[in-house]
Image (cartoon, rainbow, N blue to C red):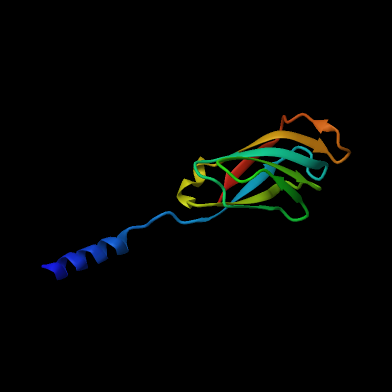
Length: 122
């Protein structure tokens, strides 16, 4: 009887899947590709971020990582991936949202955020 319980427990554990950690991309859509020099953005999600890495050629400034984290990225901002974030559960990827707070031209003049958007995806 004890052997059956152990076998059943082993099979149950083998079939269960827990959270899988991984990374998500934050992609920028901009009406001024190559003309932007800085962006302030917020990422919000169900769990604290585990890491943040800037896109190629960008410099990252960030608050301590949490469920809501503000980031500043400087450098020539491309259309596409500007930030990669680490999460504890890729199954919750759709619950992470990135929001543009402000954008500056390479000349440091603030721009209207109209036409800018951020997408979080695997």
